Amino acid sequence: MSAELHRRAVVADTHNDLLMVVAARPPAQWAEFFRERWLPQLRDGGVDLQVLPVFIDEQFRPEGSLRETLRMVEAAHVLAEGNADEVSLCRDGEEIDRALGEGKIALVLALESAPGLDANVELFSTLHRLGVRVASIAHWGRTPLADGSGEDATGSRLTGAGVEALAELERLGVIFDVSHLGASGVAHVLELATRPVMATHSSARALRDHHRNLTDDQLRGVAATGGVVCVNFLAGFLSEDPGGYTIDRLVDHIEHVASVAGIDHVGLGPDFIREVKLELTPPCCEDLSALAGFDTNAVVPGLDGPRGMPLVTEALLRRGHPESDILKIMGENVHHLFRKELGRPA
Image (cartoon, rainbow, N blue to C red; front, side):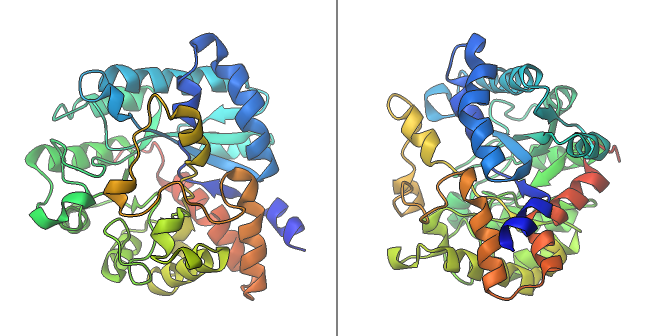
């Protein structure tokens, strides 16, 4: 029963760093490597809608950040063009619907912390021209636009350039992502936002008190904009105790977000990084365990990559959730948000 339901669902994953692994190879291998290594995983997991974040590893920061950003954006285009029978890089809801109707996986480009843009807000328009449709403006630390959640003690809001960035992203129809943003920054965004915002990979702070997770007030705030909170699968964000690194604990977080934000405002942002770290360490891919405060190599059994996505459908059914709610959680809510907002100018 769960397998049939999973096949019917539009399964959306709003955070998988696979572009880092693709772009680490010579350009001539980008399309073939994606087809051989990642496409089977996405198909086996039933993923229909995949957000591809552009995250720049420490070895490129700060001098090479913008260059590597453009390289990863180019990698996304090349892998899509080289696998046009299977995937489509989408800029708006119509293109997503067309891709899904043709049995293809819809890919959406995102910026994670806007690396290399600094305070040059006008460059968001450049990246928008290249297909970027989701963006965050901070990671763990400080940027010229805002502080990440690792700097919560500063109590800082968006900088002047960060306020301009939010307005520019809303103008362009690029969805603002609050994942990784510091608490005061999230509050600032929610004060100013005139369009839906989302959290692409954040879990519930009420269940795991970690600065990367969202409080109930923040969950309600994102929902009030019409946005979606996509729950992170990374084990250490689900439980402080390794004994809680289970799929049932993941479902606890999903249920909590749904109970606070509403069933129409919860999705999945797995943050599958195990293969990325195995592929890129060494020489790159910094170990974020010290920053995170837990072993970032730890995974929920069975959920170390896209192939595990059917397990979430199965777990939700086992908990007794109605099919209509499961379809919303697995991707219908994200699909609806993207159909309504993606690439639509203010």
